[in-house]
Amino acid sequence: MDTKPSKGYVYILSAPSGTGKTTIGNLLLKQLPFLERVITATTRQPREGEKHGVDYYFLQEEDFKKKIEEGYFLEWAKVYRYFYGTPKSEVKRITDQGKDALLIIDVQGALQVKKILPNAVSIFLLPPSLEELKNRLINRGERELELRLEWAKGEIPCAKHFDYLVVNDVLEKAVEEIKSIMIANRRRVSFILGGDNFKELGLNGELINLIKGGKCHVSK
Ligand code: ADP
Ligand code: 5GP
Image 1 (tube, rainbow, N blue to C red):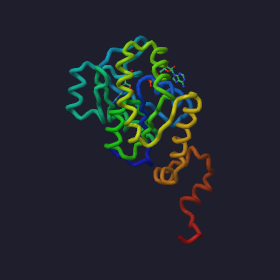
Image 2 (image 1 turned 180 degrees about the vertical axis):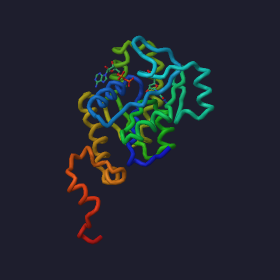
Image 3 (image 1 turned 30 degrees about the vertical axis):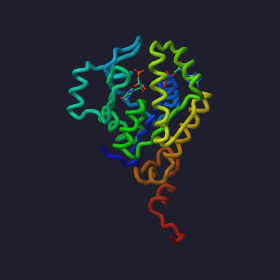
């Protein structure tokens, strides 16, 4: 898979369960037209209201394992009791269109993706405290509370291996901070010129041609 950022960035949003990555991911997807979520695969049962091909690709364990053998996944991990994996084809489909792919995955998967795609941008979302994390899990009606909290204590030290740390205390603030990271990347000269991504800058053709074809008169 091509890892050049000129095509579209790969973002990894990861956090201990209950921190708010799904909530934040949904807000980012609503607000940023260039962003698309990667639908991942899992062997767990759909929760009420979840749909195959929308929330996840729900697979039988046997099919999932077959797909591992076939090299179908960019990464896969066992999270709690189930398998989860990112289809390579999904990431490619999104970035080939020049869009940014948003991967909302667990910490093990995030570190795997970063190894395979060093240009991927990894963001670790933190709760303001462990107490608040517990409250959020309780409010969500989480049944496996103790398991998830214990797991979180092993995940938080992995924050040091990420590119960015964002605290989800006030929701809107966390969303704005992540948006700033994403927009800044799409304003990189390497991204704009490398992939001919002038469209969303709103520049007129004359200026685009000058930037692309003109001669900079400051000698370097
Ligand atoms: P994750 O996807 O990381 O497991 P969710 O997005 O499901 O987390 O969020 C866990 C719970 O916390 C949900 O009930 C959500 O509404 C709530 N939540 C998310 N962000 C905040 C926040 N900034 N302040 C308070 N509650 C939040
Ligand atoms: P849930 O079962 O609550 O939907 O997800 C459990 C955890 O698995 C969450 O942290 C979620 O982000 C993560 N997850 C979802 N898809 C993938 C994936 O493809 N790979 C990995 N490694 N984790 C995933």
